[in-house]
Image (cartoon, rainbow, N blue to C red; front, side, top):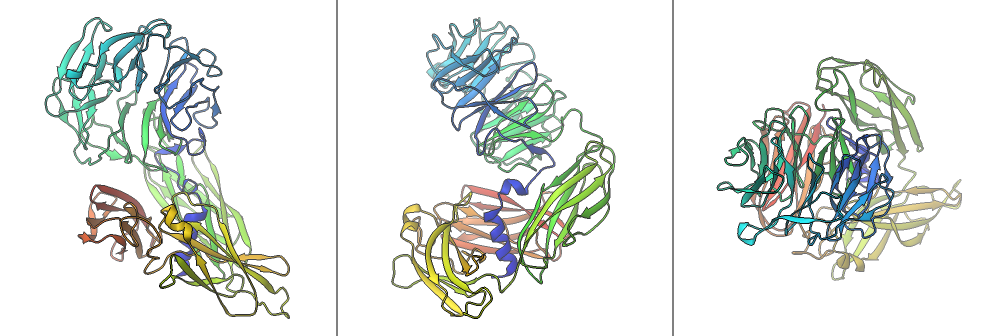
Length: 636
């Protein structure tokens, strides 16, 4: 296994992904909490933003666009908060799925239940109309209250013959109340006194938002995006070039009419021309599970995610800055690099301004072991340039420093990016040379490593003990688990047979091992974690078959960035038709790595970019109904 493969594998398990990605389009806010699933937003007249969560049924608020979040008081009967709204008097209402409606009159400090006569609590959407009446959409129908929830009235019943319940409610440009199921639109121009039923016909769509120009936008259960300019009577297909499927989706619109469209597990699309053309707007998102979108009155767009917290648009869509700098990532961590080698990481510098050229006049490092490839850059409007940073360790110690950048962005004229790395000497740590299952045994692995520092009695600081550690290679990583200790007795090669009884029960497919050596002077050195084998461990995990994952998997390519070749690993629980295709940033196919029917198990493909220019490429795996795309960076 190459040093660089070791390095990238270690990076994937030691450095949180969120710390290695920043954005051109989105900025991660500092919350509301680690790993929160956010499902709803509302805002008060002073700009305070409230976020309702699925995770634990809490409500959070921020007064500085996500810079800091504060947890509001506890809702008496918490459950997922799927909808929120605010009255003109800044009283906040939280629709708690299955548990009722709760009101706060003190900025979220306390909550009172306000759902008398609300006979169905399957609330997924809410609205405050221009008279101050609150509407909520449920499986049973559309309820409303004009006395802040003291009493509720079922205004529009979801009749069985009309296709079931309602999930959202809107106010259109003519002040009509609008809701729908999968068969009809229901529209009232007199605040619910009478209703007009508009059949969908073909296609069958579901309204997802109403544009400032009055047009309705809707989506289908597949990849369709549709627009109606006659209140839903007829629909025009606007999904040219879009192939996003999923059951959960949402629309929101900037004040000037820019469209934002999110679909579960796909991220965000945007359109500046009423849906004629769409572009993916995912840079900066650490998860593509985007659920609600919300336009704040101050112009920012906020996105709630399933497990990644809240993201904010990098700038107000209706007034993009003439000049602004964005860098990705916000810190460069090289982890361990072998002494005598050097490693390079790319820093993406983007001008998210719409007019002026970004001028980077100086790039310096406070530590000479980190060096930038250039001391000046010119970045055109809405353009990007890659700045390579090289780390050359001099000794087996931790190196830190700061990359200093000076530019003509008056809002951020000086940037300081943390740098870190650690020198890694061959004589400092053990080196795992093989991991294999023993034949004719039940889940017993043999781990073999070479000794590290001198363990003889005459050594200045001899090794006294080796210890073996393991952890499950699952999403998000796991803590290291101590397995066993072996005394250092002067061997050049050590081996341990380790039973893995818990692997089958856990259902994981991969295990990662690490060896630590301890010296008489109480110094400890660690090997590179290692779990990659060819072939991989087989028979270790439960699933569709020996050596097969429980579901389709696709790993990030390694190395990444790469030059000129990189490897993509993926796994199939069952035999399936597989395509693995690489596209450039324009969406043009540049390589078809796999197009065949493949057996269950783990597979590997190599992409060679020798003939291609530096830049971002996208690798798309399709296996049955599974589709995933990863981003790759080719650096010359």
